[in-house]
Image 1 (cartoon, rainbow, N blue to C red):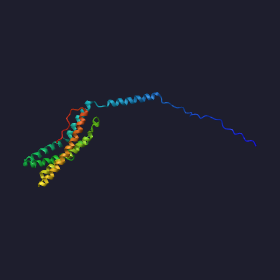
Image 2: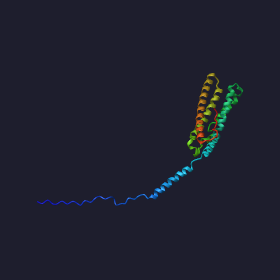
Image 3: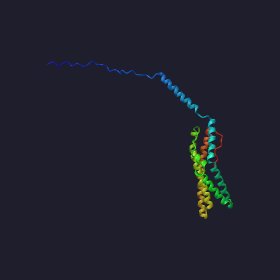
Image 4: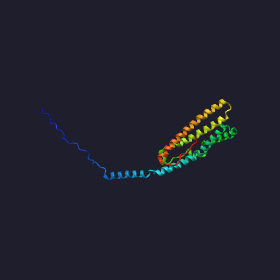
Length: 208
């Protein structure tokens, strides 16, 4: 019995896809290079000059003074009145209490429109990297701490027993320590910004 002859299909080498490989035209790369250069040049043109940074920072300091100024002035008045009473001017005690009450209220958002306006303050783009947004929040915190200090001053004068007076004085001392720490934090941010901007404008002076 004869075994049938097996035939195999002829070997055909595999070929790559018939689709032609498209290369990116050189002009596309040229366009991308020009676009990148344009973006770079635009970014350079938007870089603020040293004089612009200094000018914007000076304007910012003025805005801070406008927002916190009356609160700070009221605290200074309270400190002066408190010192007079402690020095023995008891006749001034009634006036001092009124000064404390007014000053404390004037360092709240509800009692001071300028302070309320400053609470929504937006730092300019030129000054955005100077951490002034944090300083703005600290200004509001400082005003709240000022309210607490003036309320504690009144509590010292209102104390009717030695024990109450000691307690009130301890609370006042703690409030003043907190206020001074907040002022030191603000001074550090403002001083750093002033140095970085090369500005000569004085930083806002808050009562110690």
